[in-house]
Image (cartoon, rainbow, N blue to C red; front, side, top):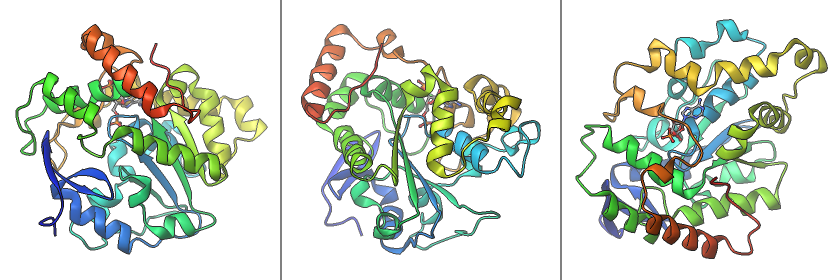
Length: 306
Ligand code: A3P
């Protein structure tokens, strides 16, 4: 299936499909989810580049949508990893090229994906009432978070490359699910064209004011908080349950590895805006800032990176 596709290496073997560099082993899942996934009215799709706040968005969305089934103190998040509550389309449901376990115990169904907007199933884009939430993170922290994640692992998919080599590849757009600029911009444009269908969130805004962003997300999803819920402090409670500090402290998120060999604990690190400053040289920061400025010029999308 991948024979005719352009190939590169970055962390792992990559193949270019829909102008995006996907991990080669995921190509069957990417193609099958694009061709075979049939969105139902009401479905929620959580989209992101890896290491942009996917885990957080899964926890927040699951909590908003299921708050009538579970009180915060009984949240399944206390005993189940966020990645087991909301599964990925291309890397779980369609991993083997065929649909698996698409039904969910309640509606709306929630799915996650890292694919580009171009690689989304047409049924997601065409459906009137299937909503997409995209979380975006400033490229400097996104790059660093990715590096930390994989350098902490002994995954079979990882090959030895220096941070300098990986940085050059990130800036060339040869990085898993990248180029980052086209991934971000495709969803950004979709959110401007169809704001009722695509919500564009940033990791930095979520960090700055989680409660406001949580209310914004709930409203967009069609599950707005009532005045009574707000008065009871439910928004703050959900924010607390989903916080990095809380999730990181839970036993379920501390031990074991996920099926692709990544330690569960590596999904929960520092969660800071601007942590890149501790790891990238000033010249690397300048290079990536310049590139970001060029690529996003005129789009209206501006990154907060401290
Ligand atoms: P850092 O590596 O900067 O710490 P993803 O979930 O897309 O894989 O992104 C991982 C990044 O989000 C990591 O960033 C991780 O620490 C952070 N993160 C995970 N859960 C979080 C949460 N509940 N709140 C805030 N940040 C979180």
